[in-house]
Image (cartoon, rainbow, N blue to C red; front, side, top):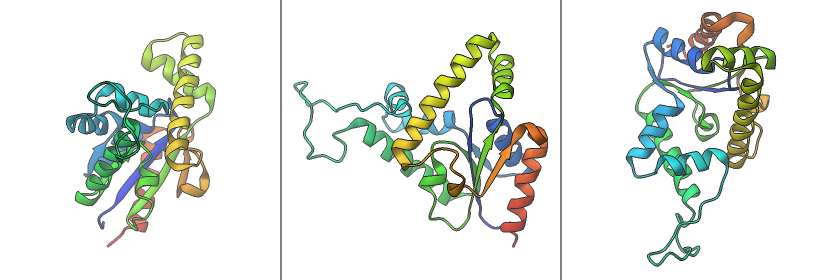
Length: 201
């Protein structure tokens, strides 16, 4: 296949990460999940606390040498803006460098102008997602439901702040997949087949 980028957005508990990893393994291309991208961002001086604040959609004002808030003279006066800018630059560089699968981090929006991009969104019924979270995190149904609601709220708020659109908006995706229908391997195979057809040499 030609150079290709597969961006996978997913609902928490819908096994999007596992599906993306399987796709990358089968196509023998790089795999970048949220944690790996965040670790790269942290290497350039953005702390984990700031990354978490960005994910929550919280604004953090930068401080001057005497503790006062910085003015608007700097593009990076707002630390959340700086963190988002660095994250965008890293995602663009990863996409430019090599074929890869990128999980989340609004990569579908950041890379929307590329012609070698396939935008996927993985979802699943709430009861299935709750069951998956109960199993993966060893939680009760009540606690899994609370965690799911918190993750949905956080990811939606972050994506809305960065893109101005909802995470699962079909107009911003090429393919929406209910992972409960085909499972991890079946969902991965569907993505691979579409990628092979669209990006065949």
